[in-house]
Image 1: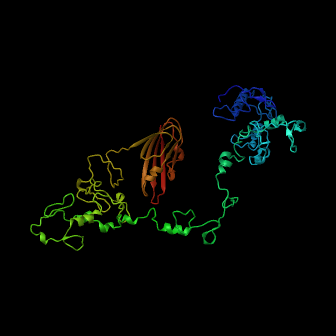
Image 2: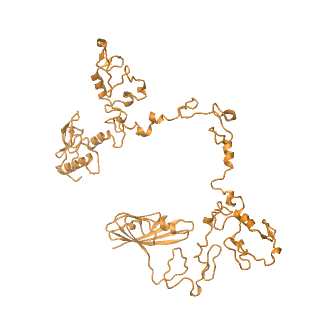
Image 3: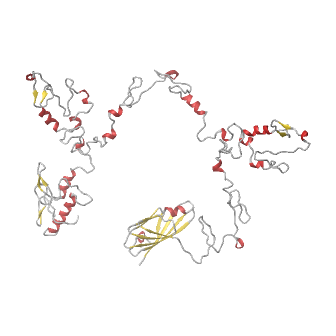
Length: 538
């Protein structure tokens, strides 16, 4: 709040009527985002009183005394316009409820009646009269009773009684109910009247009767214990009272099944990560490696007969030229016969085999269980792969050592961009430059050797990425130019043991800027030590 003149507070009498309108009062919050809370007005008034005091010390009197022309009250008053002692305010506020506190009235109604003692639960109302002479109350809860000439015999009480069986006057009921909370209402003074006294939201914490209507209440006429448990005996042969436990699996039985029967059935099934037997066989049960030929095995097979290649059906017509009588044609396949084989025998034998363009239903893996598409490369995938470098083929790991001797190897006349680490034993540069990160803000996790910063507040440099890039026994140097228009603090984190050239105070950022050099080194055990050198610019 901008300093203003003295702001009078609102004053009320014992019946909560406003006697004097003020800028703030009992409904004003202590503090808020717009600085119009009661404490904001109090602090403003203290400053005004301080500036108006005759001796300029703001008044230090106590116990109703005076300092200059200011009287400081020692007790709160509904009429006094004097300032009041700090301790009096503290005591008064200390007895008030915090804005996040639990009000006592969360267990009481707005008149202070204890809810659990004053109001009836629905379960308590279950035995109350719901109709009179089969007449249910109307929307207002009234039932008209005809006395049929016997009115003189009816006594109507004018006040509620715990012992009387008489009828009760309408206005007496009205007065009694008028101070009660509607069943769907929220107690005016109970900030948690929709919660229990522990702060639990009732509708989220407790179950309604309608919620429980579909739950099991008994099993075999046995009710659950206080923990909701029922012990069911399966005595002797796996059956208890009214319970039959099957010993074998069934597609029709609704009975429970014995543990060992389930174990036996599951034990014969394939694990979800297992390898099915048909992963090494075709769908007819033939072992693939024994039944089918590999491409390498076919490479030495006959591809033509008398320079005649088979047609699209795999047939070759052979002219026996008078020698036909000497040709024996087998009608069944044989592992020993060298004779020709009848067409239909070959057809029958091949009809159950996999075509060269077909995919075996179960042949997704090799015999070792490796998924073929994940384990093996297609020829098309390796068509563009380098097979040798300078006449040298890769070793079993796919590596080739390239000698740069005699001017060969890496080009010295064009740009070489290496994304992997290069190890050099001896270097000579005519010119050296660095990719430079340029960051504005108050935090950075640098990943390059050089950076510039334009800061607007205290700066934190997180060295976790740079230290993570170092192997054991390696070091790196980080350099940063920090520009600023004011003086700020500089913090270096995740840098292991941090040491300074000079003192830590030298790392403070000045309005003229700072040049920072940081050496990060990791020993053979992986322990990081960081040495920071800072130079203030002029």
